Amino acid sequence: MHPIERLNMSYLLAFSLTLGACGNRAMGEKTDLDDEPDDADEAIEAPDGEGVLAVGQAEPCAILVDASFVYWANRGSGKLGGGSIMKVARDGGEPIVVADGLDTPEAMVVDSGGVSWTSHGPNASGGLFRTSLDGGAVFGLANVDVTRGLASFGDELFWTSGPDASVQRVSSKGGSPATIASGQLGVGPLVTAGESMYWGTASEIVRKDISGLGADVIWQGERPVQLAATSGAIVWSTERGDVFSADANGDGARLLAPADEASPFTRAVALDAERAYFTDAHNGTVNAVALAGGPVTTIASDQDHPAAITVDGDFVYWVDSERGTVMRAPTRNQHPSRARPSRHQ
Image (tube, rainbow, N blue to C red; front, top):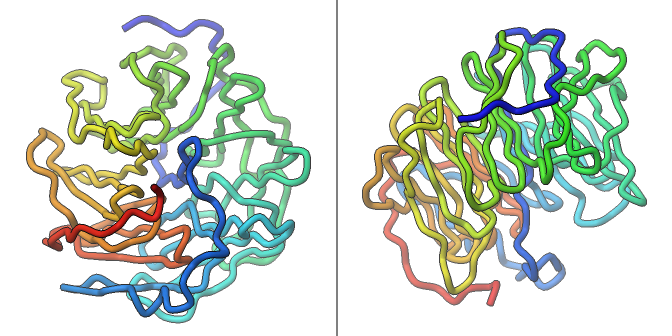
């Protein structure tokens, strides 16, 4: 490991929270939602406890879960002001609007004090916003251009800034943003876990101790585009679609699921204490594999474009961005994968 230079950290509060971010689409990947079948909802299967939590959502992306609710962001299918932040009870019910009239929400984080997200408007302009868990007034916290990562520690929010090649922070209560790391070429995903924060660059994964001043490169290779972490392990996917795991310090990195060479797609990832979970948009599946490696288990199949994913307790949750659904299934679901024509060929 080698230190990252140009770190400027005044302080970080040690408090780990859940992160969600919209999945990236591969080059040439389909984005037109107009050719979806009218009976798409009828095609959704729910075997062995798999369930549909919400339908008719406008290109859902980031997804998170807390003790009571599942939260997600709707991009708005390209319509200016068509985005929203939504939630629904973990066991289902009527979806609740937390914030609407948004311009293309992207990254999102939920903590005990509220929901924060980044949005992008015309000419790639955008900002970092926050509201309470029940909705209400929306507060702008910072101007944000292009970001793929957002995380929180205590009262602090952190995000990655692509144009500035930096990691930024601001208080969730307001104030002036500050740079905590610069020179991070290709900076993208950002997550927190335990006493650490992690972010990805064009060819590296960087780990920073919450209470420390330095940061270390813990992995080098293909560009990481999705990250997930616990206090004991990290999981990431690369731009070509490979899924890896390692311990919290980056040691013992191993390939869990190789990319589909026929049609590489970005895979969203999540993990618990034992397994990694990832979506496969090309094959329309949600999958699990032991962190130590082993066979890949299909938890759900016959999805159109499974995107962001999260896990909590006995269930894994994901969004299907093309079908406009929010889904869940038991983490130990054994759903046999059936071959189907790809919608992305």
